[in-house]
Image (cartoon, rainbow, N blue to C red; front, side, top):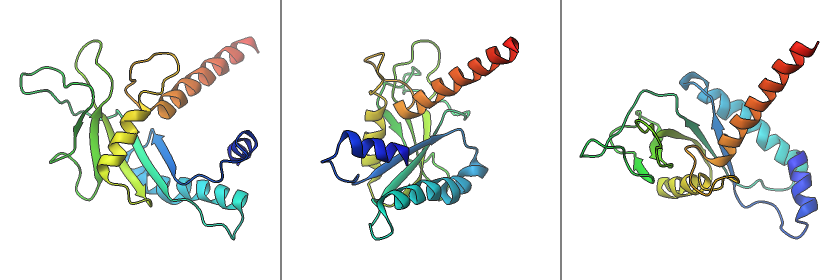
Length: 175
């Protein structure tokens, strides 16, 4: 809710968001339902608390991004696939809206495409729209101008968690 307050303060004339897009990482297959039923609902409750019960919430789209899989994809000449490649036909799990995307250029070794699963799509966006938005989010890194392998919010969350872990380890040694 603090993020919504800060957004309202910094952009007083912008109104409420028309769409909320949530990226999530670090879930196993058995935790997906929990993310949808508990985490997404908690986010919606925060929006509802901020905007009030009389306000209709914007539609939510929640996408799970993970690189924890064992699938490898190659082009027809047995080389890494090019950045921007999306694989979605014939590979997704039954009943899942799932696709694999190579966003960044692989610097070394075999490219490992990121696995994306659409957990919630209240906006009824097409899979192509979700893929295009997700690919665009991989180009919003603030340090490098090229794409990163995960959408920037997920990548940044990883970096902040790593920094917090390192700080905690240093703090333990100081005590």
